[in-house]
Image (tube, rainbow, N blue to C red; front, side, top):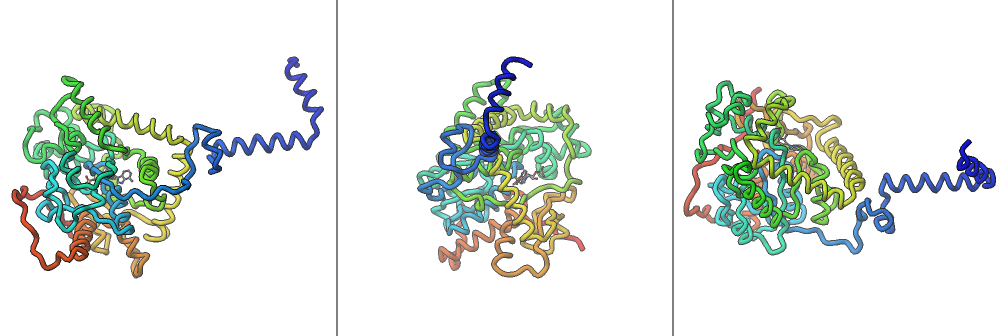
Length: 430
Ligand SMILES: Nc1ncnc2c1ncn2[C@@H]1O[C@H](COP(=O)(O)OS(=O)(=O)O)[C@@H](OP(=O)(O)O)[C@H]1O
């Protein structure tokens, strides 16, 4: 036996059984603390990898001035729904588009504060689609507004855009058999910069962020770097759709909200039959090459996201994300029955919960309330699963009533935009 083991054996013999037991107990407690991140006040100082306690003392007040840039096909509707419900619970004003902008702030035009319905000004919260314009948002939002947004892996996002906007975007309509592969094999054959809704077919993230979606980082690396810098200057948090729960943990910490404030139901998801089960690697590469600006933005902010998670303490963020998932599952069961399922619009009886369907070829799923649902709990459940169009209309009506704007006719916009995509749910069959 090596000498070191011999001396260890001797030392052990010298200790009483009780001391050994105490040592084992102390080691296990220490290991448990490291893995579970127990919320003891001395814990963060002792283990710098952990995160600050859940309950801050003295508690920071919840931050209520929030502008969420709702980028396209990035889980933005789910985030918007969280913000709408938070605003309602805390009696906050939500900026909503003028009716001639439909439920978007006249996208794809650059945002203007004039697109905001007067009955929804001055707002605390803004969360509807728009093309980012820093100065115009600063004109509208109160000082101290926290700006947040969300990005999604560009190949997955492009597959979603291609399917969702297939009937609206001319670049996609030209492609034979609505084949994503055919488009990505020769995008230039179908794409015309500057035509209607072209931004849904090329670097949509960059466009939504107010950038020039026709720039190529291959020819102009400085442009991407500049766009990243501008985003970093304004946005306090860039969430990542693939890590949605972790993103919400960072969001609720940034805003000093409770975990309950960020519970959600997944909204605007396509049915499995309307999506590619997996994007082949070659197709994903082609999607990233075509959307190189978006790929550069995503790669950068995905990296900064994980640096942020590390700063908050990865174990802590994961633990909170787990708590969030558990609380969310309990809430979904309470609202939508023992086995809550996403259903196609045709199977949703509650009209307010039928999601808008972009075409006959794409099914967007939603939840339904169990029959006979009534009372205040079901009101909260209704809002939890309410699609964007219905929730925006509901909030506008409510805020107009609150502002006493009922009797007045809608003010006209000076320069009304072309009508955006029709925002009506497809009539359910049967
Ligand atoms: N929580 C959560 N986590 C991950 N992904 C989610 C989540 N909620 C929604 N989604 C997916 O986001 C897609 C819809 O995005 P948006 O709501 O931003 O679309 S829209 O631009 O408002 O039409 C849509 O993607 P596809 O199904 O691939 O189309 C949703 O499935």
